[in-house]
View (cartoon, rainbow, N blue to C red):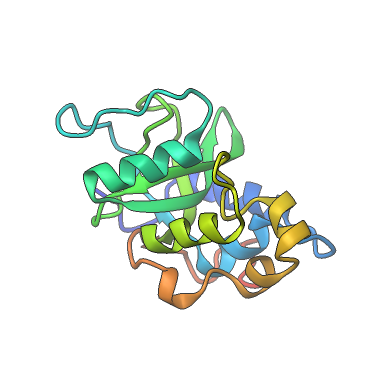
Length: 178
């Protein structure tokens, strides 16, 4: 069950994301403070949700799993081994995580932007990557093809899904804008 307040790991993840923000660079770390939500780690269900097989490819695996189980696609950062890693996972309506790539218990905290599957699929189609999945928060694609649309304006409101826990306002040291 999701907690009502951020955990120590949540705070460590928020601080790690804040440390990644470079005011002179466009990156996912600029979007997370304004649109991100916290998610509660949970074990993978044993029934009805087979884990996809491609190791190291969390973004396409997550999109596939989200379609299979009717969950929400989320991109952001996961906190594991005292560091923040760019990652993607599924979220249930109650804000608990379904992580198709990492083993249960590998991440202590998740912070990301929940998006509709329709938006992610349209994004994939628009950037013309039929053979390679490119994440929405991909620095290379954004810099080359979409120079500031998502990293400065955020994910369009119509593409956001209201799941997960709202970020604390304001938490010590946590930035709330670009």
